[in-house]
Length: 358
Image (cartoon, rainbow, N blue to C red; front, side):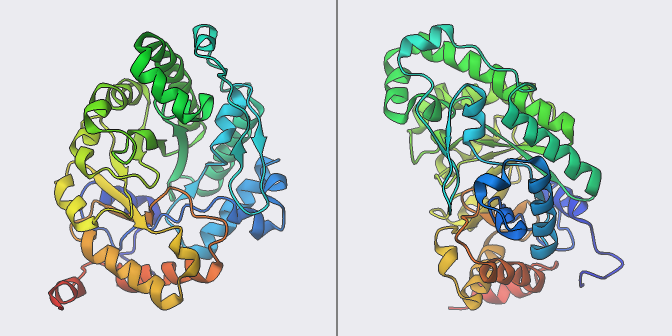
């Protein structure tokens, strides 16, 4: 079957089919490009994010160029801490970074109030972008919104070390912070869904077993996720942002999320077996190595991932981090897209012989 077949699906149909653990016409491809849009429209990264219309134009060009199966409403992570009064440091060739922490002392948590998501200038631009993208594609292409999880957001709000100390040493303040962050993250997620987002990517890197043990996750990150996701009025995908998740994949599924973004550090076939039809996988092409891939290497990596996780649906090919680095060249991304067209068409009859090869 080729892309012009009368049985070909659009991106929304393709994605929903695989999330139902059925095989669509081909493996969905989520190329989560962000700053690449600035290059497409000839702007610096800071100029690009200054106006919603720039991001809309960039995302539409990237969609056509790379034949991805989603549009990405994400600007940059620090746009959330901007809403709390934080600052952003723009770089010429990478994602904008958070400025100074907004929580300077644990005592600041006692008076911390969640900002309005409909009055923060940066968040308004994101909502305008999502709405404009929805007007262009309707229900044919998934539009992915993003929210940093209430549990992981404090890494940007106060810094990693001080936050870990808070979790262990001040449980009452930790709970106070979680209540405030849950209110913000839920409101932010629901505002994006109301603007036209199809689903929310719930970024929760701290919950990864790369960062904390499962025992701590079960009493903190998982409980926060259950509370937050229950109030988000749409589908969610939980992303570990390069972190490991195999030891907690069943626990992640228990939060009610539909998808987990997985690490290049873990084997897709093992993850697929562990997911056991309860949760779909998103990943796990190596975004760091990707900038050095030749077209042949890109094709080999795509083929490897599809062979390991593609059969039976429940799999979306993407990068391992949730954002493809700005320095990854067009040639690599085009090679990935071409390889999905070549090797991602169902039924994946070629997989059996590939796995049987020595």
